[in-house]
Length: 268
Image 1 (cartoon, rainbow, N blue to C red):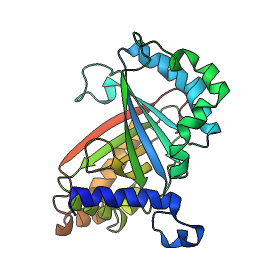
Image 2 (cartoon, helix red, strand yellow):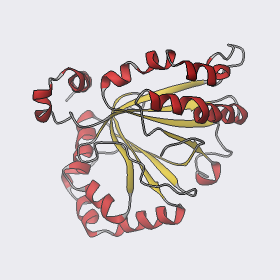
Image 3 (cartoon, rainbow, N blue to C red):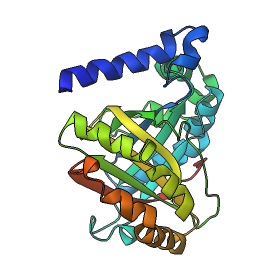
Image 4 (spheres, helix red, strand yellow):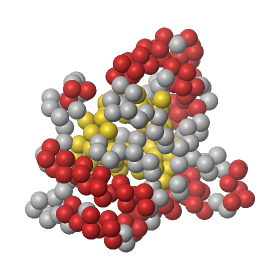
């Protein structure tokens, strides 16, 4: 499958979520799988990040709930958790927006613009001056949930919880789809479940950066739980067998691995 065919197929899948009549929903393999957007915000300083974190908690996340979006995840990076990647705490935030439908995604900004409570509570951020913007920029990654993990979930609740965001880039569309198959049909998701790698989401990226890729997030009660789960995964006989399956060879070319902490107001 070439890039043009893949993008056409991806767009068609997304549109089918909205356009397909109810009678055909059962026949559509994507009908019950959520669409979600992962936003990556960057800031000019940590002070700007802290101000935006307060805006998320007090204004944006409540408004997203009123718009039917949730559970909303908000996450920040600490240098102590990502020592190999950063020399200091990065001024970055990730925000996860799960949608019940493509229509919910397409109408979100209109709903937020009409939400008077949101516009009032978030006024300082929403109307920030060009000379002093609330954030530098954000990038959005649109994903479709995997079959077998169809909705975003919040499996960890404690104050010490942490998350891993992992992005698996592939060198071709065919290999990217094959890696997704390894998770869904090959049994990798089942192995995750068995060893305590509790996922927040698994997503096939439809638009965004680092394409083609799949992206997933796992949640843990604390760092010890994370280390234990990955040790169990590596030692699991089903994983050892699956990892040697030649049909899944060369499905991943680059892995991004980040450890995240919940930001203020996060529902995940």
